[in-house]
Image 1 (cartoon, one colour):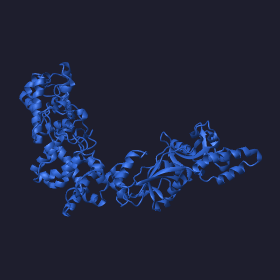
Image 2 (cartoon, rainbow, N blue to C red; image 1 turned 60 degrees about the vertical axis):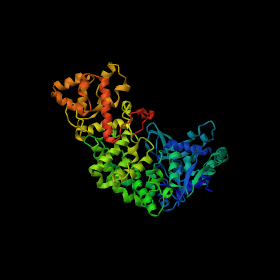
Image 3 (tube, rainbow, N blue to C red; image 1 turned 90 degrees about the horizontal axis):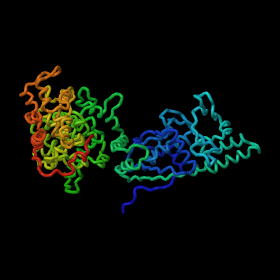
Image 4 (cartoon, one colour; image 1 turned 90 degrees about the vertical axis):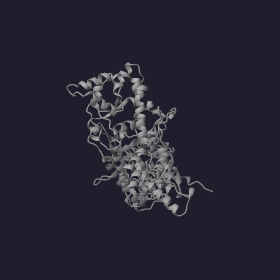
Amino acid sequence: MPGSTFQTNPYDLFKLLDDCHEGLLQLPDFQRSWVWDEERIKSLIASVSRAFPVGALMTLDTGGNVNFKPRPVEGAPDQAKDKPPYSLLLDGQQRMTSLYQATIRGKVIETETPKKKKVKRWFYIDIRKALDNSEDREEAIIGIPEDLILKSDFGRKVVLDISSSEKEFANLMYPVSKVFDWDRWQDGFDKFWRGDENEEIREEFRNFKRTILENFKYYRLPVIALDRSTSKEAVCVVFEKVNTGGKPLDAFELVTAIYAAEGHELRKDWYGDDQTNGRHRRFVETLRSPGMDKGIIANVSNTDFLQAISLFHTRSLRLSAKNEGKRGKDLPAVTGNRHALLSLPLQAYKKYEKNVENGFVNAAQFLHRLHIFRIFDLPYQSQIIPLAAILADLGNASEHDTNRAKLEQWYWCGVFGELYGSAVDTRIAKDYMEVPAWIRGGPEPTTVSEGILHADRLKTMRMRLSAAYKGVNALLMKVGAKDLRSGQEFKDTVFFGENVDIHHIFPRKWCKENGYEPAVYDSIINKTPLSYRTNRILSGAAPSEYLKKLETGDNETPPIRRERLDAYLNSHLIDPELLRADDFEQFMADRQKKLLHLIERATGKTVYQGDIPDEGEDVEENNNE
């Protein structure tokens, strides 16, 4: 029968710290650096001095399923690096490093104040305060500067000088660095306080040793030890759920540590170094327009990139299994889920990385052709993953006009069917398998068959959270919408140069004054892409008024002939006569039909005319913003 892959045992604190010193207990290399400030260190020392629990540790036995590159705890001697550790500390680094440096390392601790000022500290226990039950134990733990002289009044007044053993004895200040080895210190203390008249002080120290120092000597910590059979995925869950030291660990960091054990610097691939730009910087710079700090694929994460590579690798495994005669459930799944990422071999990463990077770059170009220029206007961040993988798989074939048309149809079906909002791992894998096959003559992919828009959904698209809302805006620009003032199409240079955004057609002010509710006039039906300067002309006026203003012109804008302005309006699927008549209700009905027809052409699907389901509301959507 399957059994537990972990056991919980108490371990002596001194043994654990000594193992850290010797390099037998180390950290996985992905662990962040030690960061505790002096107040947290003092609180920890105080808790151990009172034999209070400070939480369990979690370790992972080495030599099993998970092979991480190890590194010693901060401050351990150089020779600790040469020892193969028997365990890696998964949870408890901050506590163990703090105790190691304070108790057995024997060197001043480089830490910081709660206000992040860098300081060097020795830690001492005020013997009399520690023995006084009315005192807060943390007040008995004292942080002393490197020279062992505590000053006040901006360094002008000496408050405490314990810069020699004799001064430690005289002030009854016990060094935390001696809590496991007090015999020699006690010999010096007894000699300093010799004589019958000082017997009470010597007894005071013996009481301190019994009630406080022996708490360190006999202190035991519960350790949850994960054995060698623990899976990579289980280790990842540990960091996500029980790592109390900081932010959860993601799959990229775990894969980084796994590859590091094989001598590969995955982090350098992604982030680069002083000499080279990493992949992340290249993505940030891809199609970055003037005035923008990043391009359309800048938010592609390191795990997104690994997920796309994993699709290629798991498909290769599936094809190999098929060739071996396996069928049905015996075939491995094509997936980019977390388990697949943690099982991604370095060899597979190296095999596919360049092709997949090209796929993401081509995805940026694809999105620009659809007039999606900014991350802010990207319908779904998650849909970039299958898009990049599909483009990488198709290679030059994706540039063929017929193939590109199919790719665009698939993309818009995902957007207007609102299929990439959440829980998309399965859809990503299916699209990666189905779309290239469809382009090569196979059956229609699931996203195309399922990507159906409800007719009344347009009325409820009111917020930028909606992928379909952003999709309508991009489609209008793609089919040639022209700015109402300048007559320019919204190419990328115009888009950024003219500060184009989506704005109301019947202005919000006019709608309010005429008794219409935001739920109606804030719909995408009443919005369209316009430049900043054009939107200023519209202001809060009635459409009939701002159209007249555009036709007559002013000091800043030359007049626009009526028939030319009508052409500009028609390019936005706006009926000029309904706008000039300020007929809001007829305008909304007419433009809804035209927008639905536009979406039907883009998706190749007939819009569903039935009732809209509840989940169509914008407030329920979850996209990339």
